[in-house]
Amino acid sequence: MDAHSLWTAVALVLIVEGLLPFISPRTWRKTFMHLLQLNDGQIRCIGLGCVLFGVLLLEWLL
Image 1 (spheres, rainbow, N blue to C red):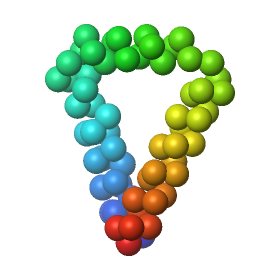
Image 2 (image 1 turned 135 degrees about the vertical axis):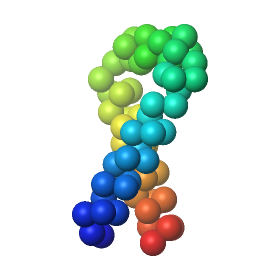
Image 3 (image 1 turned 30 degrees about the vertical axis):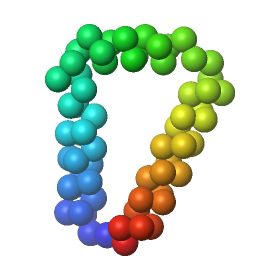
Image 4 (image 1 turned 90 degrees about the horizontal axis):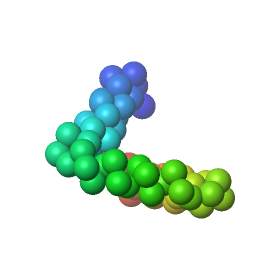
């Protein structure tokens, strides 16, 4: 992976991450408040799931 591809991927992540707060700030705020109520183990589990999904998606795409 060259630097251009890496920065393209970072840009796409930022675009996707910014869609919900832009489109529906009230929903984003409610979701964020719900996340604040989770304990550390639950947040780690969500993070691990995201990482595994990303790795599997990359493996499938490449």
